[in-house]
Image (cartoon, rainbow, N blue to C red; front, top):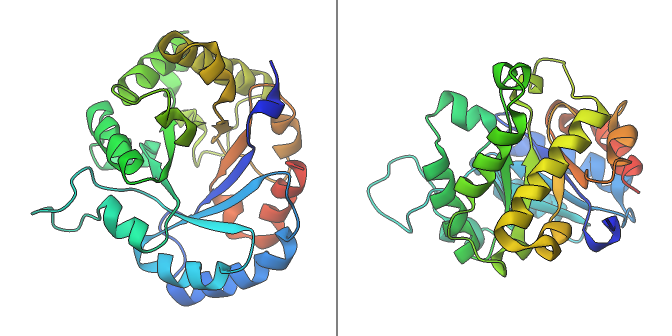
Length: 255
């Protein structure tokens, strides 16, 4: 296995935090802290209303701005939703799809995740595709089966060529917002199981070239140990992406 084949991506998921003015201030604070850190790609995925302000603040820096969700239709009677075309015209390069909170609170399914993924890819965006097991599944010893099934369902109809624009974020749901974190060994093992599922679909070359992030409460204290593992190629960062110094420490660990 050669990690050099894959790009390291540290992506902050702001969730429902930061107004436009707060986002501007935060980006201005974090820009000098991550400037010149070329060992990874730096991304912040922002609430829809904050994207324009974040884009303006990040202009000329090594920070890319993403969105936290996208609808699968190009347009239509979908009140409250935002299309891929709307996002790309705002300069959005990345979009999170299938986050555990979307699945848990808003009825997201593997079928809708798949539809959103294909719409985003067709619009030229890079997808950060989230998947992972709940605590009961982990305790029952079926993590491999769950993440393999999700990988195959969520990527149904996605081509090997399109996989160049797919990042997978492994989220142990039991570690999201709970303060719990998978051990580095657990994270590496499950990211490897996801990579095995990719190899079944696309072949080992595509699997080895796909960036797989860890998304279960990575922070400034555990980042270095997690990122040192052979199957962990970055992080999807929640709470620690809201504090400039903590986020900087994670980016430093990725160098």
